[in-house]
Amino acid sequence: MTSTSRIFLARLAGHAVFDPAGDQVGKLRDVVVTQRSAGRLPRVLGLVIEVLGRRRVFLPMTRVTSLEGGQIITTGVLNLRRFEQRQTETLVFGELFDRTVRVPSQNLDGVVYDVAMEQDRSHDWYLSDVAVRGRGSRFGRRGHGIVVDWVDVADLMGAQPSQGATHLLATMDTMRPADLANALRELPIQRRTQIAAELDDERLADVLEEMPEIAQVEILGGLDPERAADVLEEMSPDDAADVIAELPLATAEELLALMEPDEAEDVRRLMVYEEGTAGGLMTSDAVILPPDATLAEGLARIREPELSPSLAALVYVARPPLETPTGRFLGVVHFQHLLREPPSSLVGSIAVNDIDWPRPDTSLHEVARILATYNLVACPVVDDSNHLVGAITVDDVLDELLPEGWRDQEPEVAR
Image (cartoon, rainbow, N blue to C red; front, side, top):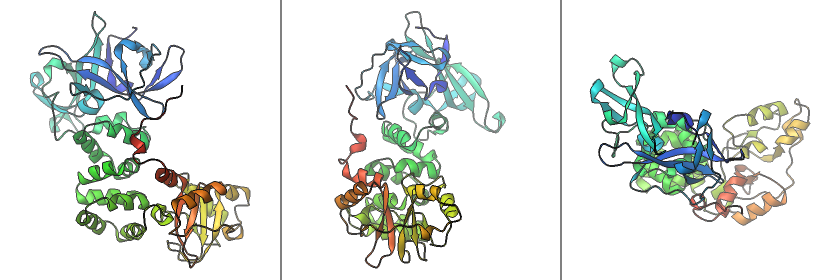
């Protein structure tokens, strides 16, 4: 294997993994090590590689042929069986980063922000050095960083209830919410909760929306109630309603009471609809405009970065009030139509309302039929008085149609 003598692992996080032909086979998500007998350095067993449909697999170090220039090249042979961590194994990024440790020789208490590995004469890899950032006012605002030998650092292994996640999250900064959710599901429960606690409210809300409800409940249950209520406010109202419905009644009422009244009202209204119906699928977060709004205003609204692509696909036109349930519903305008007409045109002049839209009690399969028939990625839900009460997106329909627990199932491998 071609390599440098010492490699700091944080710089490899998220890097692409290539086969000998130069084709990318995945991305590095973690490094697996095992402790050896007293006085011996931890051995690096291999890498956790994310391939295909976010499946995480194990790549032994014996199949890594090069780490030059931050590029990871393999022999091209991957076992696509899902990686399962053994009790004797430790994940460098997931479990070592952000540990509070002590360096007795330096009289230093600090936090681990990187770990280095080296290769010995027998071509085995082992952890050799630890980068520690000092804590305390005498080290400056962020503390100074030092690199010390692994054997000179205390408290590197074992459970640590107060472990932070700042440096681990730095390695995950560019990950999509769905990928970060997948990474969290692979970690021990305690570590998962610690990491979730350090995500900002908006990022945590995005991640929770990509997790199974049992994991959502588990993470929210580990947060202070006021923080949990703030996170729920950042979630889409339909997702927040789903997770609150899974909580014990007393906990659910406590969190709803802590939420902003308008946010809590939206969630309470969505919770009354039955599962498997249009009402149970819809969100109140649609882009709603009055008929005298211009197409330019519509384009500005759908450009808002927090909107999902499916919610940004349609503008819903209604008489005031414009909060769901709205005044009389007038129709929808597809974003492509907004692009084709003069920006000064009024949305009311091009809104279409020639489809029998779902009612709150419309079945899931009927909603799916409407979306498929009219090639839609979203559609309105109206009541019997023709008021807009919400919008349904195709991703929520697919979520319901797929088998329960589909997020945890193994993706099929192309042969």
